[in-house]
Length: 433
Ligand SMILES: CC(=O)N[C@H]1[C@@H](OP(=O)(O)OP(=O)(O)OC[C@H]2O[C@@H](n3ccc(=O)[nH]c3=O)[C@H](O)[C@@H]2O)O[C@H](CO)[C@@H](O)[C@@H]1O
Ligand SMILES: C=C(OP(=O)(O)O)C(=O)O
Image (cartoon, rainbow, N blue to C red; front, top):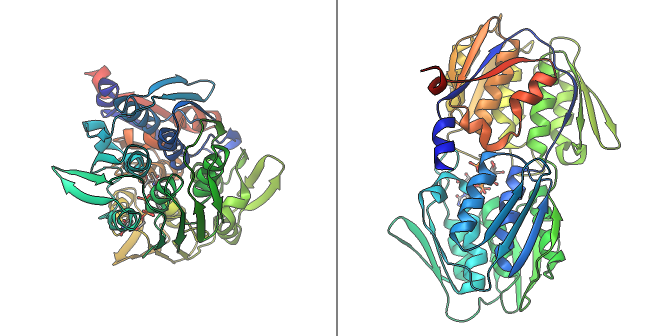
């Protein structure tokens, strides 16, 4: 497993620009949902089965985290099924190297402290896109009666007896904190109210699974969650919600390349503002029964975009939208309001000829005459995807390095892009050497 991670770290994608994306792509379950559903399995002893599980690196890492806690994990990669058999008494310490690799590992904190009265989780990694504090998680768990501290590079939460329901007002609608507090609240004694909760579809998905397990939650998908704690939960089978960020990435690619792509399983309802912006930029979008079709015809028109918590424009589509703006017809202003360092990507996009200037949390993108191939580095999962989109419309060959970031979140990216007509291949430097 770690060998797998090591060998992937020297892989790159080689993309020859000038092709249109045409055809159909199927969207798998969402990375940012499935990792939390996996953490939620810890709330009940027995076999939880997740379906529509994407074949991504983060699921492999999260599986290892659960194995480290005593679970037995079986994965049918092709069938998208993952079974997690959780013992009566799981371990409480997730402190290995793998835990630090992904952000979502912090999601085991709430379930473990609720179920075991103690949890130790190494301070997590994930994408280097900002300071990514955890104070809202910590303050919320403290309200529920846990003592939370940092000890030896790990977050440690303890409570004597059961967590106690409480009213919690989040300073910011943090996705991760809302999830941790939900998972702690379902097994707390009494009622927990989370106000200013995050409303992302992945949270509604988690609420659906917790409810099926026997949890009592009101307000799923809204900014106020009311949770009546129960004594115990049961394992279930649950289907992961489709990945709106993967769907949005292919949609932007279709528009940028003047293509025509059917995005199967893509939920237009989860991409409201995104599809609205793509239409403003010139895309034709048809919403169908099980997905939506995106057609791009002319040079895209420039649009301004402001990222915000859901239902605002998602920060996880920021690099992809900047790539679109780099080849649009006018000047655009993009504003990032969620993370403080997501613009690292702009330096790489500039190497392809994009004309951009960052200023605090804004980036001004002017139309480039043309983009031309170069060697660029993916600094995070979405930056990598954004660079591949730019490479599709750049003249000549682009090498995107550090593609293990892309593998964290995009299942079969090269295969899907190739099936849509892109000229892209994966090259391993180690194999060449
Ligand atoms: C694995 C996963 O699901 N990752 C997603 C999740 O990340 P994640 O859950 O880490 O994102 P959050 O919503 O918690 O963070 C958003 C902002 O709040 C700040 N903050 C957060 C928690 C806290 O305790 N204190 C604090 O200050 C962060 O530094 C950041 O500036 O939601 C983000 C926002 O939609 C997405 O970009 C990530 O892809
Ligand atoms: C930022 C992201 O992931 P993570 O929180 O896992 O780093 C992402 O999915 O775009």
